[in-house]
Image (cartoon, rainbow, N blue to C red; front, side, top):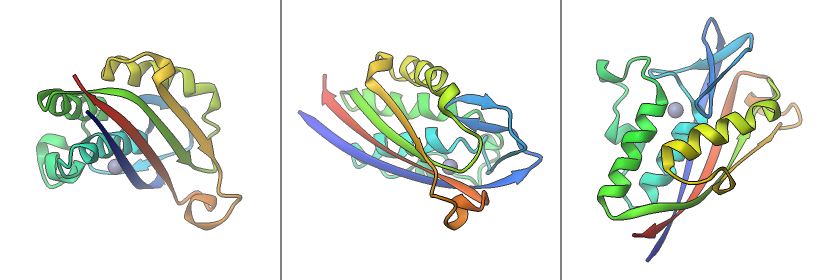
Length: 158
Ligand SMILES: [Zn+2]
């Protein structure tokens, strides 16, 4: 009846890349490095959705060796991932997530991210929790070399 899933994703931060997070482009001096648009939050959510149904991970379904996914908008990846969930007869109940990064501050952008993700996953914004924390200047996130996102989901059989 119910399935839970967990996802985690990491990306390096580098100059000369757009900063995409939660499907929203944010002005910043750096962006995440990756084969796609490197949206760490959407990737973690994809992995949580796949994990809930033991469908493997994002790399299985959207290999970073494929030219098809070069610089692809991760909203497309999330949309396709949710189609797989629906094909298995499940729907999202709610999701919770946390992004760990030093800069930029994402609080002003959370509502926009919630709206994008809720629309893609056909839930209300109250069903999409996005939190953020720094690592108190410690480690790679604290040095602004990269960022991490964690996500959990609850799915219900339709
Ligand atoms: Zn990723």
